[in-house]
Image (cartoon, rainbow, N blue to C red; front, side):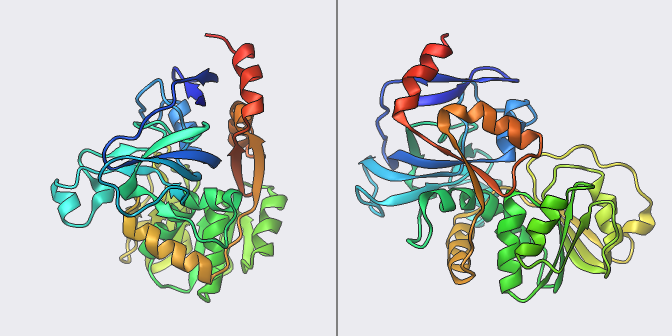
Length: 340
């Protein structure tokens, strides 16, 4: 197999050849057909999220099962599946037994503690793989495995209020905005100051208003979801929600939240974080995504161009989501140009 491997914090990723891995009990081997690029991958690259190095990043994997380990009963050879960020849970800690496997004390994370999908093949725990609905192509489905799932968990945590603010209109927001609009909500999109392209993109998806994160929306919001990992957005969003409103922090990492007056929080406003996902999130999300006819907007790169894709994502040059496509014809040249 071939993969783009992160050897040290700060990168870059390096193309490597490895023996084809074999699935253990309860595992699947997947031929990767597409893998999304997530901002969490940047946090891993920068050391803001600790990974087991060397690691193959990528936790929005779509592929076809080509080998099945013992004790797997829910999948067959040739099935198309998706692999998300939460790649394993212990199954017996207090959180797992309470149905909160997203908070497991001994989790495994795809592309962080378990090798991910910037590769031709990946091994995955069958319990944390999802069948991909036929209406989504491989490229369309890849961003749904994290941006979509975390967006869905965040949307549910935000409650059922009609006026919803989305701060940071990237991969996750453009997916969940479609579901929120389908649900009949009024969506208000917040982007970087001066990002007219991002604001126009949000409006094209049915958002009622789009503006800068520094702006006050034209109405008080029932809830806000923060997809941008910027702590300064917390007090800004608190001032945008009405009394009793909720602010949901969706990222795995965020810069420090600055001090703010208690008056901004008073009135039973709440701040909460969302961590990882559960298998139920996957089941319910894919059902909702089909009914809402979600369509992901993507920019495609060859898997061997992962460093370029990550750099463009970091600079905010991507509209929608980034997806890597493995092409074995590219690997030999990439390995030759990036020796150990």
